Length: 275
Image (tube, rainbow, N blue to C red; front, side, top):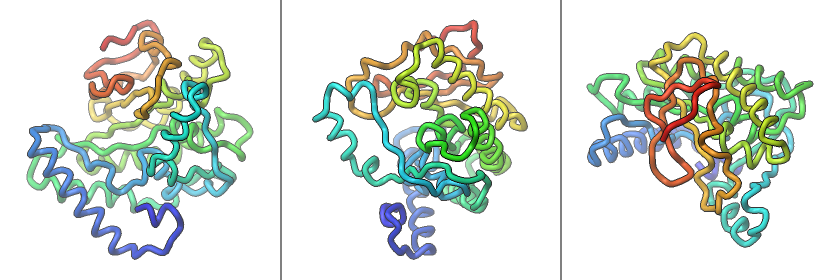
């Protein structure tokens, strides 16, 4: 996977076989640990979000750089965070052309690999993750579309088929939306809170548009502040993050402190999040 990410020659058939085997192994490990709702472990992806550059056309610009607001005053810690093998090797080329689906087979392979791994277990007791339009806009700079809203709309339109393919394949869809929290201290660190919320609402509207054909009960939303080892003193408060996520359940897995997940909550602008 790292070789592919670095542009080195890769035997695609061998990689596909290794990914399929890895999905089988990680599902078996989850079951052995007593986990009832399993996933494919994102084994086909170099990261939960940057994989889209391999599935969508339009991302061939120069690489993006990131400033994590909470790491600015801790340069040594920042160096350690960004030297992590996963982060240091991931590629984030800017959008420099019209966005369209380039590889529709990749998500079908994800579905088939997970179906083979779960075997006779009822579909729906497993889920596949996909990047949200907003988090894609966070990692991949817009150098093509006339506005950020136009960029979000183009991403949402292109990602719709991936979301729908996952659900049509019999699995639940988890949309990863760290942009709605982590985006505050990375993508929109220079904005005041009120302006950030307006931008976050635009991200939510793009997501709701992309999910409009999917039954709400088949969708779970992952919201987090970043799973990196940092002080996280710039994290936007949980109570502030009350977004208009349509009727979709906001499912998050309680775990490492700034990476919490809500089970079965539904957000509207007037509601506050509860842990």
